Image (cartoon, rainbow, N blue to C red; front, side, top):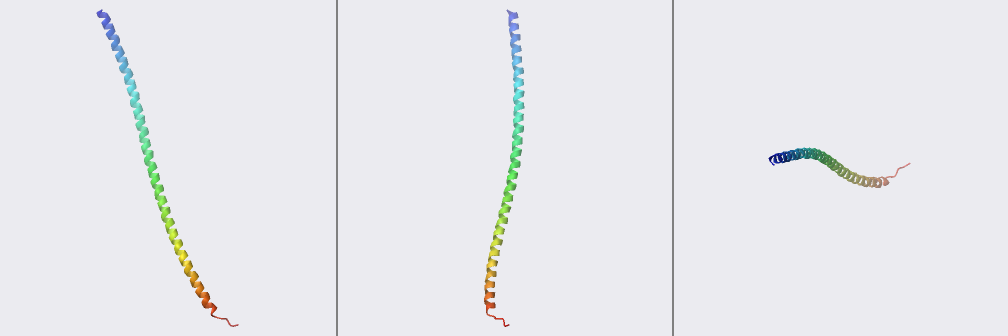
Length: 104
């Protein structure tokens, strides 16, 4: 009976050692998966950061285009005002030149 107990104890100890070994393997696999997830997360953060910088650059470029468009609009308005002024001067000049007659 004592022999049987020792054999049972040995078998139980071997099963426990086997379970511990399997648990260690599974723990290493989990740790490896967590490491991979951390790496992917780091890459995602880096890509997000780079994308944010790209969006910031695009936003600055759009702002620059908007400023240029506003300046072009102001210049166009000034050209329109100048053209109207020139048209008035041309009308006055035409009126004045009609008063003169050329003798042949």
